[in-house]
Length: 153
Image 1 (cartoon, rainbow, N blue to C red):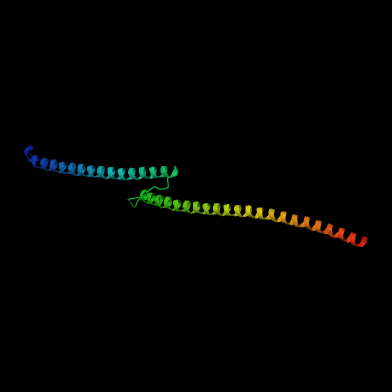
Image 2 (cartoon, rainbow, N blue to C red; image 1 turned 180 degrees about the vertical axis):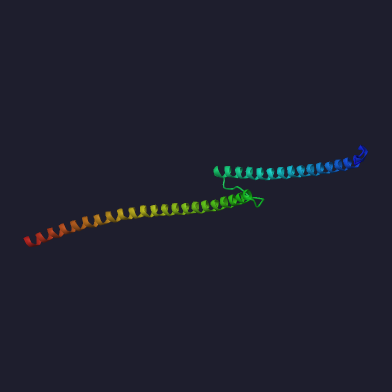
């Protein structure tokens, strides 16, 4: 009358157990895959952040020869690439400024040398003019004496 014997349930229990084991296997594989992907992402991000931190520390200490190349297209990789390019351009800028300062320093030395020579020449000209002026006074005095001597006779 509609009552099943317990032996009739065995195939259904076996099917349920098989399905449960299959689902458990799928969940286990998905969990392992998710764990692996998260570990990979962590290592990539952690390695990129560590590299970014190391390069920023080097840049902060004045070392412009950092080689910062990002391997990925994520924000950290782009930041590493931009940092390397910025350090390279800053290094070129400092080199140009250093060369400009050296050129200005050399020009200043040349101007100072020229001023020193000009000062020496100006002093020499002043002494020569003073000497000519003294000679002119002597000559004028001698002429006056000659004139007084000529008119007094």
